[in-house]
Figure 1 (cartoon, protein in one colour):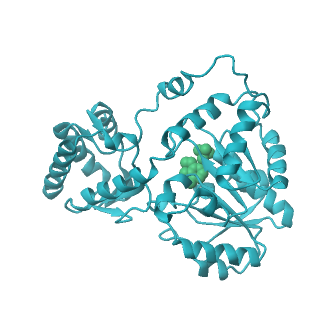
Figure 2 (cartoon, rainbow, N blue to C red; figure 1 turned 90 degrees about the vertical axis):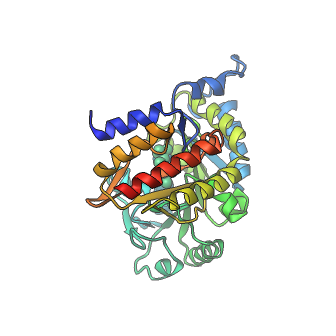
Length: 363
Ligand SMILES: Cc1ncc(COP(=O)(O)O)c(C=O)c1O
């Protein structure tokens, strides 16, 4: 077995796993549906009580007129950008070079919608107001991702967000929020979801990241926008005859976890400080601004996989399922704090980090 597979196996078999909410098995769906009345009617092609009530509820939480439930964020965001491009008759949008649209969607926006992307900032940092002001081409929409996942989940300060929003309104550039992890950043900003969303024209939020549902997303905006979004959802085959397993689980885990994000955020800061106390290890950001961060290690992934495996075996604590190469000499992994963290005895955690520190010194 490869060292990568061995690490994953040892992680899964550890007594405790540090990140996340627990295994993604079918209990996630079973638990969400267990207490529901079996006579509740299914949604049908985007209509019905189950879907409409959830859409109304989320529109109110996000402070927008209306909302549409989508099976995926990929579908929702490409559609949002398409609508803004059609409205302005400009087939260009701006976003970060490490945005999900640019690196994880097989160029869907370009191939399906013939929309060009203008990449702002560079791969090492956030988009700043200056980047938006210095754009030398007209775009229909700017997409901002909060937090910027691929650089460890960094966030602009609230004042800078306001300034970018004001600038975009003045220049008639629509602002789309990639809020895959919106609820995760609210404790840092000390703002409600609606307060953040009022800076944006359209918003996407996910229900399977910090919320921990099965899959699915909400796209919110004004009535004209969501009416268009529903037509595009149909064109994309996104109107599954029934989406209720996704909707009901999204709602169930949203209700269960919506007030736990301040706790995850505090725990992420504590966990990052444990990593930063280990020889050679740094987190990005050093002090997290949400429940997520990246852990950077100054050795090749192949060198460290057996080291991490030994830590899991010795301490009974799994830190990460996989390490990812940054280059030939270093690697990283992502951490998202969820329900698991609070269930691990402090002594077990501290022991794991003592073992990790010792083993890192020996590498
Ligand atoms: C920042 C961000 N945007 C968009 C998406 C797309 O979401 P989905 O997997 O629902 O298509 C993801 C998924 O990981 C994401 O992390």
